[in-house]
Length: 295
Image (cartoon, rainbow, N blue to C red; front, side, top):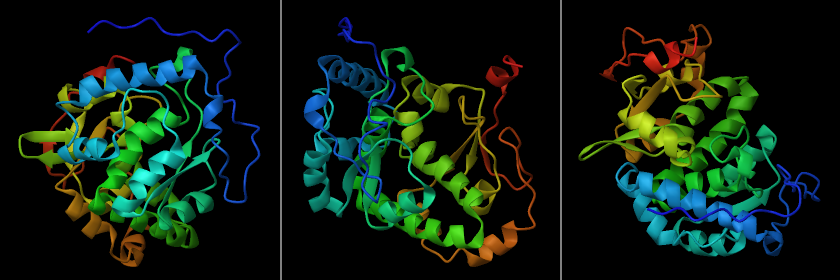
């Protein structure tokens, strides 16, 4: 498929021009949709086209169905208010603009009340393939579609409520691992094999291929306590991907009271990202070749 030449900004590019926008008490801002430049809309379109082509055969059916429900498309950066008007009647969720990552207590409060905080800025041209903090493409293309799935939408709200309790117990690190290995980098069993559902994978065309097709990473059946003991990689592909059986099972696992789980985890050792545990149900044992080559 021919790739159109990028539209370039005439002014020097800022990584996040929303940094100094006025924030409300809940850290939301005015998206100021009219202020996006032609270059920024063009960047969304190219990211969207590239990722959509890769995901056509790799994303889980629930994600692809939700994309059609919300009518997300290669037609410029979405207006979050209009997107919420499509999403809210389906599952009661809204998308609210923020400048960047918000404090944990604010984040959990938004999720617990069916509001997803999405970064309003779009990555600069120099970071098309990798960026350290989530932008509007990662948040909307990666996260928002599955919020139109009723089962996943319930799970996300339960996660928000669970986060509030985890903060009280001092177990936030363990709960963050659950989010990382499911919401961001999860795989799911599907009728014809494994499929993607994690937003961190979905919004990266290269990791979308790596997560499913590379021989390097381990792929292990999801187990709640195992995942909550496992460290993760923040600046590269994952060394282990966890595979859920279904969104229904994930919701069931995460709607329970975590008190007993936290009690058990307090004395448990940490598992490093490359390690396999004796009790793991290993779907594919990775070679770790990609990672070994970098050392």
